[in-house]
Image (tube, rainbow, N blue to C red; front, side, top):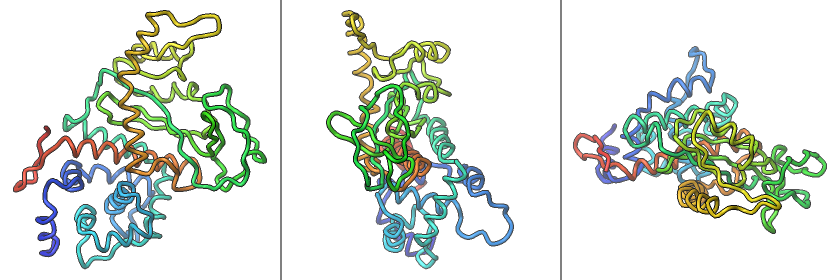
Length: 337
């Protein structure tokens, strides 16, 4: 670090969120994942360090910056330079470099692995529990980046079975986005599934077209959970899902009334108890949409939208972790509080 940036670090201080995140993460552990995503042979020109570019992507996601604005910000924001490890007189990655790097990671399919590594390190620090008491599953709509060319009478959200994918009906610049109707509003886009613990740390994400029902995705969302109970709303209430859950965890799916069979008083009390514990996942959606721009997809296609969802989840976890630690100024060690 040159003298100028050392002075900048002193001015920014240790209470800055990015400073905390930088001290918290062991960044070299992300190297093998990034190399696998980039599929680099190690021979020939290597360009920018993948860890630097990954940190740049985090900055862009955290602050809602487009690639051109990210390039500009990395030239003038001292806190961004420090976090990414860029010296004052070093070259700054341009917008096309950020775009190519992101696309390579999408093709490599490593965004879920990056999220898993963040969760592993938070567990090692004791900030996230490995075996939480409850896992909470829910989904939210993400509007497509495309401006729809055709408006249709969309199926109601959570309708079963899925509606057919007729390209003439659903035609838009985004080939993977689909229409769905929630209440009186029709949305062209995707459905973002999230699994959190009771602290609000996200450990699994999943993306589908918006017209996909939530219940069929339940099996995918409970894979790998070590929680004692899985909490979910009525959209996941089915005999098949309850059977799938038997070998994983206790049943925390809210009860659903049927025609001719209203809910019993005990079932209503059960639903009330589950609802009081599910608010964490709603908080996560609020944070990811308000702070990290997940209300609308930035790019076309399901794979790139999933990458945006994973990066928003990573940002959410790191922000939550940063709020839980305090850095000792001299040694730059941290302690949880």
